[in-house]
Amino acid sequence: MEFLQPENAPRAIGPYSIAVKSNGFIFISGQLPIIPETGELIKGDIKKSTLVILKNIKNILEESGSDINKIVKINVYMIDISKFSEFNEVYSEFFGDHRPARAVVQVAKLPKDADIEIEAIAEG
Image (cartoon, rainbow, N blue to C red; front, top):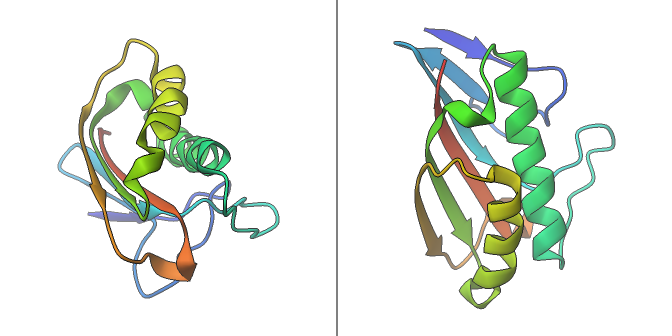
């Protein structure tokens, strides 16, 4: 098992690893819409938030020797499911023809009062 902390990704905000590589898979912890260079949390714009998170996931995978086309499962947590179509528009454009298994659920609250959090599992 290898604990990963890619350079081009936000740092963990608690006692956990951003990603773990184990048994041929990379498990990416839930990512908030944080711009790695500034630490800024994007709020109030689900499209921008979604894109920031997906780019961070892409960076984590690429720095770990994988890529977004190896993602097998995505879990999405949103505080307002009425924004689903806006989220889905960005998500669809980002992934193109790649269609990992996915769950999207509405939650009452997320760390740092974020609007969205996304976690992923990919082949390593």
